[in-house]
Image 1 (cartoon, rainbow, N blue to C red):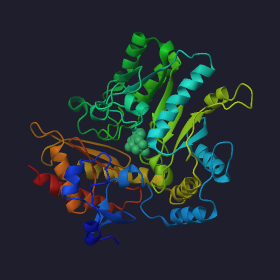
Image 2: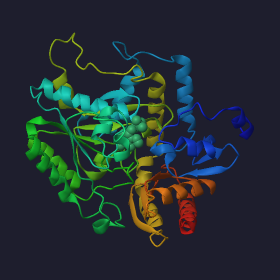
Image 3: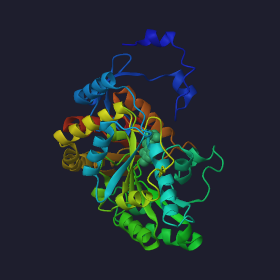
Image 4: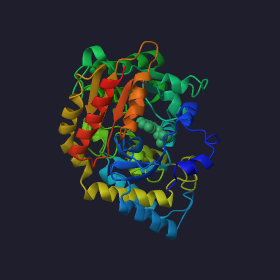
Amino acid sequence: MPDTAQLLVNDLNPYWMPFTANRQFKAAPRMLVKASGMFYTTDDGREILDGISGMWCVNAGHGRQTITDAIRQQASQMDYATAFQIGHPLAFELANRLVSILPGNLDNIFFANSGSEAVDTSLKISLAYHRARGEGTRTRFIGRERGYHGVGFGGTAVGGIVNNRKQFGNMLGGVDHLPHTHNLEKNAFSRGQPSWGAALADDLERLVDLHHASTIAAVIVEPMAGSTGVLVPPREYLNRLREICNQYGILLIFDEVITGFGRVGAAFGAEKFGVQPDMITMAKGLTNGAVPMSAVAVKSDIYRTMMTGPPEIIELFHGYTYSAHPLACAAGLATLDVYEKDNLFKRCADLSPYWENAVHSLRKTKNVIDIRNIGLVAGIEMASREGAIGARAYDCFVQCFNQGLLLRQIGDTVALAPSLIIEKEQIDRIIEILENVINGLD
Ligand code: PLP
């Protein structure tokens, strides 16, 4: 196991860390070297309770033996195979298995390697689909403020996070945004879906009036916005978006990179919230985080529309060297087996009332101004320090890590999304550490 001595022989400088304050981190590094079940181990041998499933992805807990074995077995049998004009059986098997747990008629699967790639793929499919049906003027995308759709130029453009956008110029043109749904005055401390906010979806009508329906290809939203601090959709909001999209022939894409695979107490957010999108993007929990993989599920009508013209013509000029990578397919199949065998999506639903009560018990904790929850996710928002947005939650993150809890800091919200195997005592422990840390923060 690498220890501090090993660290000293490694220069920390060459590795440019993503979404990290590099100089701050390298002055006081935090290193993980091992993971099992609900826990990480640090390089100095401390156990860290993983309150965020790594990065919202290890839904079945760390180090699942059957997933590890499947990856190992596949690596020794066939390490790599291209997906261009050649197949391998596991890719077809995984596509079939995914279709069997997806809601509605999402019957076709396109594989990629990250949430960002899945999102950009879904945007490209939208354009190609409208073009194939003779509506090639539909090129505009509608995202949402405070949406996160990864870091490709498409995803960054439809996303609504100022810090992710400001450094990167014009990105993808022809994009507009719906308003976000976060409203402390109306909805603070809501349990589950807030009751106020459905009418915010009507803003899509305004955008249709502004741009004309014939220019709009798709609306993309996360059913629950995770990366901007756990924004649970107001009741009836997603249904309303669906209605308006239907009315104007606009595709509705749910970005379920976080909400997929049991996180909100059903296989997908679409099922949990009872709204059928035209496409779902997924990643993270697809392989339990063990091998990078993502996918776009499309409704059968989109696939059928694309399967026209001479059969020897490639229908979609798009794909990745590592689309349907054999190791990822093996990991994905083993992961779906674990979810099914351990009934983890139902376990999440069964545990979520306990989780809700536990996180809302922090209501009276110092500086806490909102608590939001759904499934096994929570966002705890603190008031910002004067002129220092994010500083309080960053301190919370560091101190929790020092006390043995990993969570995610987003502005002045701390997000929690533990693996679906978490036990009640571990939930209690998360709350105990958080309460102690937050009360001690200035
Ligand atoms: N979409 C959503 C909703 C996400 O939460 C994320 C990552 O957190 C992404 C896309 C991007 O995924 P990746 O980091 O795998 O590119």
